[in-house]
Figure 1 (cartoon, rainbow, N blue to C red):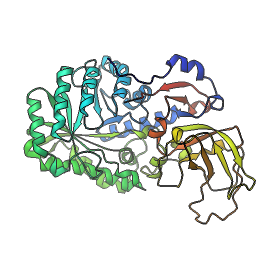
Figure 2 (figure 1 turned 180 degrees about the horizontal axis):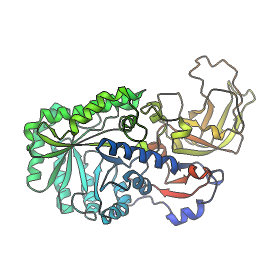
Figure 3 (figure 1 turned 45 degrees about the vertical axis):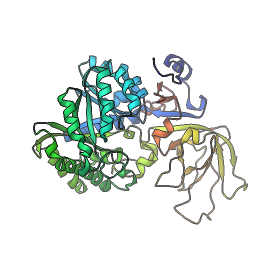
Length: 462
């Protein structure tokens, strides 16, 4: 019996209501996704991975949709490798994954945190519909292997296992020198011999690059993460069979997308990439410490980007928010305060924490950036209109003056009108999207970027 979940209306019902409408005319707040930008970001990542000759595993937790997962997987690779953070994400993707398999593609889905025992049965029930070799778990404690064995018994085939390495982020995993905690590796190898598990390799997810401010930092962070996994292999080489093929999987969106600085369509001769280039070459040259090793990159929010991602400046060729961020929240202006009522001009918008999230961004003080295309009239200022304060269901839009410090200069009226729509780019796309059951999809490549062309339902629940 499946776990009861809050269900979205049918896709047909949603499309009938929304498709063809302008964003100004839909109920708000609403989350909107520009498919043209998302396609571009997905293809750029696939091109870079192909140019480097490395594998790529796409995380779906940002968007939780089948449509964007299809774009992440692309059409060329015989392998489709994904990461999910919840069982409902896997269930939501099931029809797409079956389609990939029917078309002859090898499918593998990684559960994105060390396996909670309560999820093993649910994962196995879905895995039976996909077959052997399709499900992988990450492990960083010997006790978690009991759930792996339970999965294997219920699914009828062995689970893949990544040993989770902590390369400095300290969210999950074991330090490189301590990877064999309580004989963890030997126990995994025994499960492999018993046909209950298959060791895939070493996995690290390090989001240290989220605090970066330049491409060199991001590339160096990725190089450091790869080296951390190599150190783990070196420190524990005696515990692995010498004929074992292993995959080193590393990443987070800023540092992984930074490879596009020197690989793919936007590549340049970037001297700052030397350390990362040589690190990748060392791992992919054929043999590493006597093992056949493949390198796999993984990332997720690169599909749509957000203010946090752009603040890292991980790619030298990207434009600004208006050019690159593929997701925004559409909201309605409730009131405007331009007549001296307050210390500076402000507006009140009918969206708050429960529609935007409350995630900080290093590059400015605020909770979202208002698109200049939302301004009702031209305004002569270099300041950006941002979400300056936020409550549960409403927010205050104000000029961002933090870079000037004093805030004493004369600011222009807020160029908004009561009742109009505003488009707000979120600081964290994953969190903002999670507030909604579906995306209203627009396509800026058609020249009608405010017209809804489709509705993409998100997986929800846990």
